[in-house]
Image: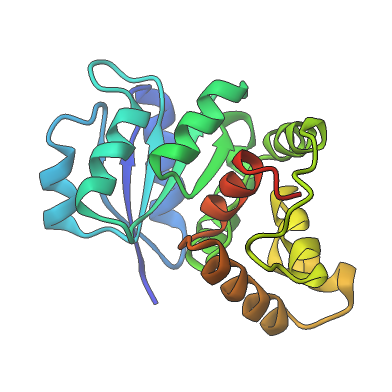
Amino acid sequence: MQIGVLLYEDNDNLRESLCNMITFSKDLVLLGSHPDVRGIEEQVKNIKPDVILMDIDMPGKNGIEAVRAIRQIDRDTQIMMLTVFDDNKHIYDAICAGASGYLLKKDISDKLIPAIHEILEGEAPMSPGIARMIIQNIQQLPNAGENKYRLTPREKEILFSLSQGNSFKMIAAQLSISIDTIRTHSKKIYEKLQVHTQIEAVSKAINEKLL
């Protein structure tokens, strides 16, 4: 199956490199590339990409503002943030805006293509440094002591592992269960937390001190 990708990146050299990576990938199709996000709502409506690769720091409207605008008209398209920023504010602003994954530009060459496939399978790919930062913040929060969402111990275990940036495959190996079982548990977690994606589940777990 061909995966349609729409790219927003203001650095000309990096944008060209990303275009080449996508073009030469066997199952990715480049649907468009832009140096800014002017007209992004119409572009997303008309092109209907599977995945959007979004820089944060761009002239005019920035990438986080663009994600918020997209989510007003489209809740389903997967949005991967590509950025040099690895600080708490940018990470949480992007997650709260509706980003599906967060990849540092220094990791693009090795991780971009696998991350695109992961994001379409319902996972929330993150650079290792981002995942470590998120888990450090979770560990610093006092435990709420209340399981108002009735998460089972296994579901909390999986949610904790997801918050570390682990893929379904890695969690399945750690817990010695199948990937399908992980997917089933994840769906139940999303239903109980009343969210639609892994990154929304992790964000809610952080904000409400569920772990």
